[in-house]
Length: 135
Image 1 (cartoon, rainbow, N blue to C red):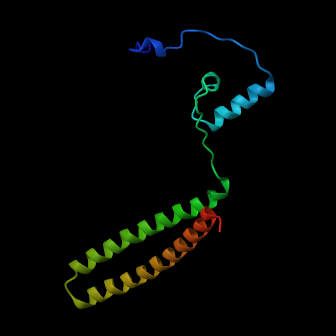
Image 2: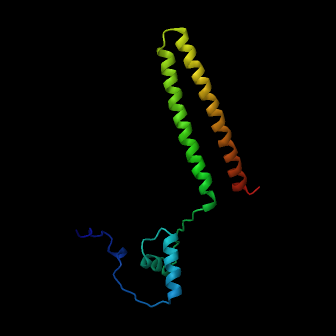
Image 3: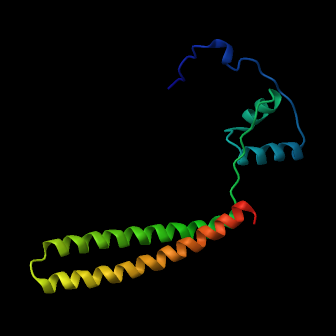
């Protein structure tokens, strides 16, 4: 399928510019391509020639462990929240006092799990804050 015709003919790339570069320069352009939002080496070259900004995206690998830990805590808190909702539903549908007491005890146990997760979360947030603010 052909690409659609552009309304603005002045924005089409109609002129061909060919050049040769050394292996080192080409590798630098490929590295810039991998780190940027560009889709091809040609786009990198066009942006350099037209002095446009190239948006580079970097990933801080030192944060990978922290991000995995935060994701795990989020999943655990979500599971605990679902469990608390189920306990609440059971408590509200229970007709006798022994059933309500059972659901109360289970809810108290779940709240202890929440406290542990929130403590871990707060320590991670504190370490992130120190790193972010360079304290």
